[in-house]
Amino acid sequence: MPTPVGNLGDLTFRAVEVLRGAGAVACEDTRRTGALLTHLGISRPLVRLDAHTMHRAPAVLEAHPRLAYVSDAGTPGISDPGSELVRAAVEAGIPVEVLPGPTAFVPALVLSGLPTARFTYEGFLPRSGRERRERLAAIAARPETTVLYESPHRLGDTLADLAAACGPEREASVTRELSKRFEETARGTLAHLSAHFGEGVRGEIVVVVAGRPQGTLLPGETPPDPEAQARTWAAEGRPAREIRELLIEAGLRKNDAYALALRVTSS
Image 1: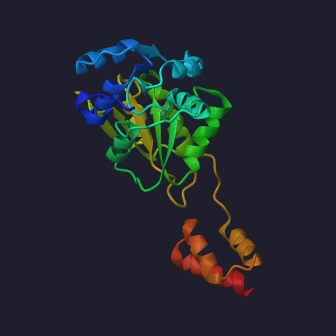
Image 2 (image 1 turned 120 degrees about the vertical axis):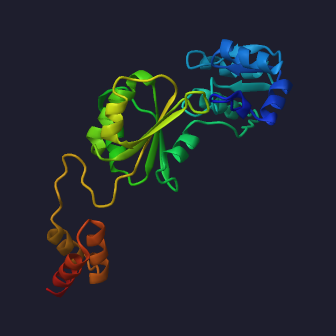
């Protein structure tokens, strides 16, 4: 069940009812969850289930038929080990109920002002190595908005890496401390945000990156030869109208695209 990412007023009535009806509460941090239960006037046994102890999930599920699970903040199973608990319950044939509620990336996505009709959630990027480079390249290339989480002390490096992969002028936003007293959303280019947050910040952080604008080149890419590409499309049997539209999507001016499409289909 979800718990607030900051403001305790975001806890739903239904979540409180579930906590009151639970036989035990599993959580990542017993101190943090204990403080939440004390605030609500609820006393329940607490069981630690985090990334280091999730191997105990089958035994915990067997010992507590009515088990509520909460993460430190937000919805369990999103970039935390809650998904492993759900898998263990499903494999054991135990019914699972998921409550809707707070999560950080949705409000941060809306606050970014970037397109929201299609987006990809990346979670936390790998800290280094080939997998990190591949994920950065995928973010740079995709046309839809990307949402990712980052820790305060790695934010500057990640923004710099994103600027190198996507280009310094790619639009983005950084939201931190959602629903808390010092909530902040900064918007601008990756170059601007990288400079702004270069010294690091505090708090929980969500980074939102705009998709690749149509017809733009990524750092290190060379412009394609439009005539060679148009002749390839013509050899495939594509009509002039379709070739013209493809050339426009690739960044060619309308008049040039029209003339080139006619030339390659009439030759």
